[in-house]
Amino acid sequence: MALPKLNTAPIYEMSVPSTGERVSYRPYLVKEEKVLMMAFESGDQKQALKAIVATIEACVQDKLKVQDLATFDVEYLFTQIRSKSAGEKATVLLKCEECETQHEYEVDLSEIKVELNEDDRVVDLTDQITIEMKYPPYKAIMESDLQGDQMELGLDMVVASISGIIVKNGLEEERMDANDVSKKELMEFIESMTSEQFERVTKYIGDLPAMKHEAKFKCLNCGHYNNMELKGISDFLS
Image 1 (tube, rainbow, N blue to C red):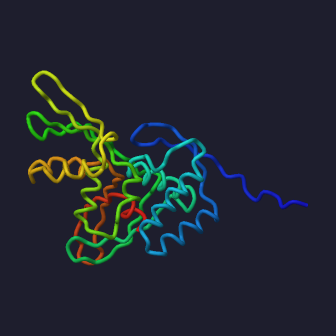
Image 2: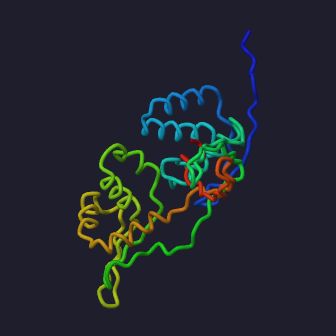
């Protein structure tokens, strides 16, 4: 006699923030939770990133290239799956801005949103050279050396965020797709920028959408009213 099915997992829906695509998903099961816990407890960031991707791939019922999604997409999808799997409330520790006393703060993960900005994705470097930007895919982070030099990591993110380079010659324009250019050439192109030009590019990356929540609380120790912004998966699931 075969063992019976223990549970029929409920199915939920959510939208991928960057595209608005609706996808169906189920909560993660013990087997997936085990992999997640082992990855998080290992302290290995890459192992944790891979476990997050594997969990989303297992739980989302629709075809979705998770590694090609923007970082904030992946973080949002995982957070929503986690909210239906381990509880919609998450407790995080926040320090008072005035006296640094730690407080437990409860966040409703199901209410977290990602606000897309309408900023122009075109960055002018000179009168003749313009670059088109895109949301860097999650795989760019997975493939980077997260424990290495932070400058190198930043350069990797810039490379991953370039969609194309436009060169103007009089009334004519030539667009070079970043996919047709080697990473080495893109890196050399970036390294040839002035500090001011590089700052324009990195500003785009710094302003990328993210999961955000405004946390307000009164310190029980000194009475200070705190107003903090929680941003990114590490702030919500710490």
